Image 1 (cartoon, one colour):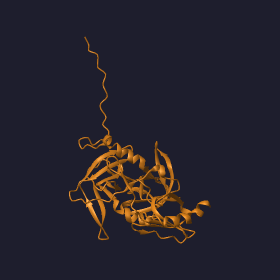
Image 2 (cartoon, rainbow, N blue to C red):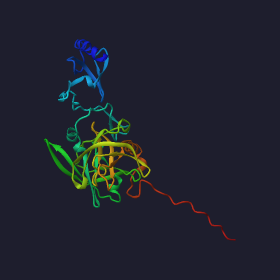
Image 3 (cartoon, helix red, strand yellow):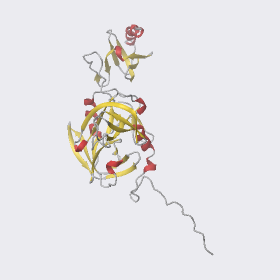
Image 4 (cartoon, rainbow, N blue to C red):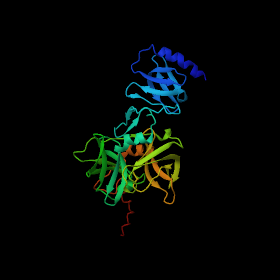
Length: 326
């Protein structure tokens, strides 16, 4: 392989270059590259050596070490585990949600759940319950329309991490900001005066998803809070009643509705909302691109207490003028 032959030479030269950030790649043939890692993708890592930029295939890498925060441990099979890293965040124009400017590294579900568990909540109404997740640290969260349909008295059960322990807390002053019945999405906001900053999630990109990719859901199926289910993405374009959904083998049950479907990068790729009643491992989620559209155009779906039937208001059709008899 030609690329392997040049790595030792590059590594030797890179050792003479002073870099701002001393990240390094340990290669299979014993060589090492030192520089600034620009991007970590599934099949390669891009590193700036100071005088040139090199794309190194993952198959050639034994270990990835980062200057800020330690290094990754190699797996027994020689393949590297992605280090827990904080992705570069890109805010939406209105700041209501965020995405990762550079793809975060993939991590095990166990690690992702520890990092994301505080972002997922249980949504309660007098008629039932569902799930939801925060998209801003100010308390904006997403759930399904059918979870809060016909209800205005809404409360949340949230877990906050404090001193290494999870503390359960209820919030009862919840405002409906916007909702779209036909997309089955609702935007809520915590209005409690003593509410702290919340742990938010990042929204992913459906174009970057691949069929067969591993995904996992967090929610409250049958009221069982913080339940995690894992599976794969079965298809990205399952048509149901005229709309397209993500289909997944991750178990979805009543109570999961409105919860997030994550990829292994910790990004929300869908909003879980239904399953087949007489089937197992056939769950569905609203694609995250539809969620972004809803958020970007939320003014069109704004909720008004004086008009609970929002987000749409239908005017009376014009009537024909009756002829005036002489």
